[in-house]
Image 1 (cartoon, rainbow, N blue to C red):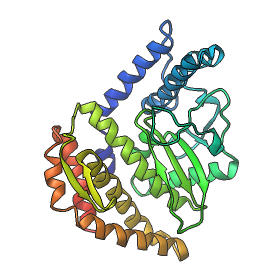
Image 2: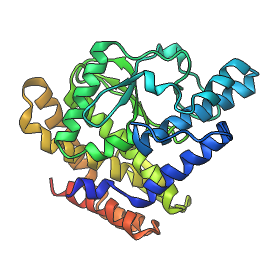
Image 3: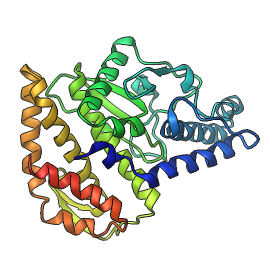
Image 4: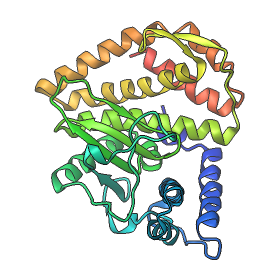
Length: 302
């Protein structure tokens, strides 16, 4: 699998540039910021933080915060970015009580803002190590564009359930629990970046998936709408491909943990072999459909 060719998707690149320009016009109609070192995907991610922050401040009547976001369309990331193998990343570890819930998301989320502080050095080192590992195993292009802001949540032990998620209103941002190992964190970054990638690709191609179609999900042990089924059949195979590549470079408890994970995913993915081609018929864009099929097909051979 040619990972750069797989993850470089021209419609998404156009989406990033066009959507960023529109958001900047809304926030600062008299000026258009020049592209930054974070690149088009990074600017796209940060523009959404600024837009959500400005909207929230406006609803609350907080003029000072609103003015800060309109003056900082990259949500202050230039001063809080951490160098990484894939380019500057924003790594934060907020207090969980600082993660609000609101109508924009069913799950807690975090917005970069005037009070943002970077994660402690140890966590930033963990994250940069994970980015390096992902890049070395062929997933650099994916994470470079779709894991720009990393929100580290709870510290857990290897073997604990690790929760992670993304929200559609903050593309390019990932929320993750973590253990003290960059190889494991890289796996979860790839999973969540995969969700961001597919959301952007569906938007960029104008694909509307029939919400009446449903398929059995071995991950949820229930019937799921086609949208969720296709997301799972993309994000989990990506982590399988990563895990298979990185296993030989691990040892001890981490190797045992990842080997067990791969075995578990093989069993689950096998049950989707018949339904996945039928679900793909709901994807109208040929290039997108072929990418989803290629990853699923390759993961089935592991």
